[in-house]
Length: 123
Image: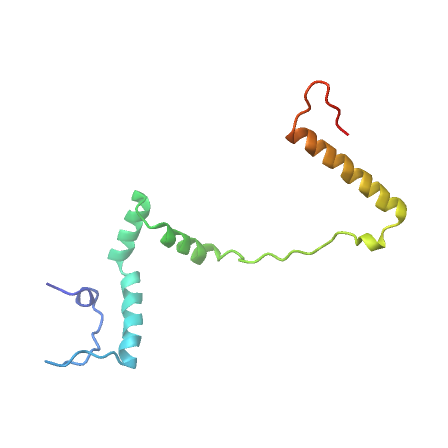
């Protein structure tokens, strides 16, 4: 049976040894990179990839990775800038308006969460 490396025509840079176990070398790591680049660029792999995309059997992680390569990976962090006014910088009138506004919002939320029954008074 033909190996994948033979099928793709990739060079096998492992040293030949009868009884010794094969040990990776610096050159074999480079040949692994070259092998997988050839493998991914092969017409057979690309056709299989297209078939999996069309059939909907491509793993979602690979589809996400293809989008990242095609359009770039989205930003993974968000910078939030606080643009609210400091309460210490507000005048007394502005603070009173804000307190009254917040009190009104709190009343509205209370009414929405616990609808008043007939005869109940909501402050």
